Image 1: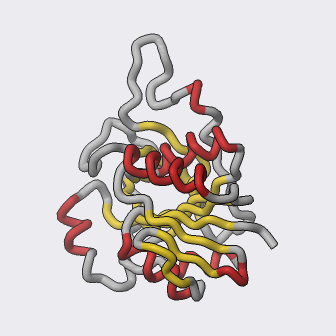
Image 2 (image 1 turned 180 degrees about the vertical axis):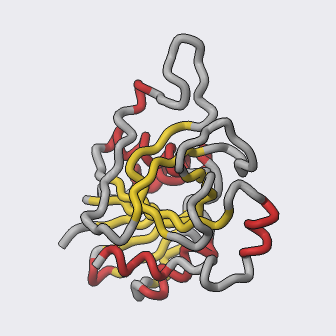
Length: 196
């Protein structure tokens, strides 16, 4: 049986998944279903906090066979409430003269695992340190605040990474806060159907 580590940024994201997967709380940021070799880590919001907490976890626990990142993302134009499977991730702040914008070549491929399921769209994601409300990108993409750090660490530890994101807004803080109380948008348990 595969040893799977689920990663969510926020407690409100993680609790729904933990309950559905019948996980017990080990400590403030970690849940486990020992019988099914599944754990869930709450990393906190942002690339830096995520990198610190995931690295600390991997330093003190056995290496998982797969990491599954589940959470919310904004998008340029993907409908709010839709699930997407992230196929590649970029660092939104990476802009070094002479290098390709958004691509950290020293960080590995940043290509992620994709589901063989035609019912979920595959899109690219840009990770930012702050909420993205405007962009010069015109492509059909998602924006989050943690995935690039997770990808870099998975490359370093040679751990396959799958990421499922639910679209919470279309680059609008107003959309985001308005949708916070909409159960059909701010629930994450439905992503587990794609993993069956």
